[in-house]
Image 1 (cartoon, rainbow over the protein chains, first blue to last red):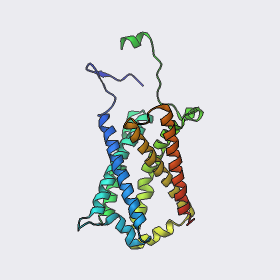
Image 2 (image 1 turned 180 degrees about the horizontal axis):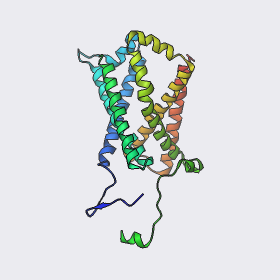
Image 3 (image 1 turned 30 degrees about the vertical axis):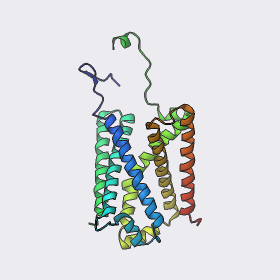
Image 4 (image 1 turned 180 degrees about the vertical axis):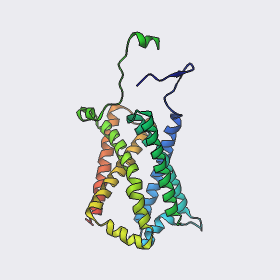
Length: 127
Length: 136
């Protein structure tokens, strides 16, 4: 790999604005996912039996008419998508050096995750 | 950069797969690699296995089919791999959050906590395996 080109006095052109921001996002989304995992685990342990109603209620319960299950699930899936994007993009940056292939993989990763998010939202909001 | 031109310095970049097999990594290093492997596995299987099965289980007729599919031994083994990947990623992730808060950063503590993560995640995977294959 050639030396990255210098722009100005200090800045190296090695990529986009990843850094502290992504580091924080990776950890915040991890905590959200960990909390949602524990909510699901408690819900599963409280399930009276493995029935259809109990299973659907686990993801679509409401609190005082508010669709709490759907909102929490959607927030968790949004966190998962963002978390996975940072992690998978780092994998491409570490192992795939040709820029064209890396760009293609990154675009596919975004489509893969956004498509999954839409699919999940359609399922859980009961289209 | 003028000093690097006079004296070329050694560069250490990512090691290759062939080198990984020869390297004797500390436990924390193995944990780290498996964190990435488990994360990649969860990412790949999310749209090809987890979401379709989830979609199926959310309709009354699909739920019955889901129960049948989940009963096949091969599906149970795939579930078990996913359960391991999730538990490993979860436990190792919590360890990283603790390390980020500047706790247990010395060599001895870091090795010990890596061992704890392996013990907890593999132990829980074993418990789930017993449940999955109907030990109770």
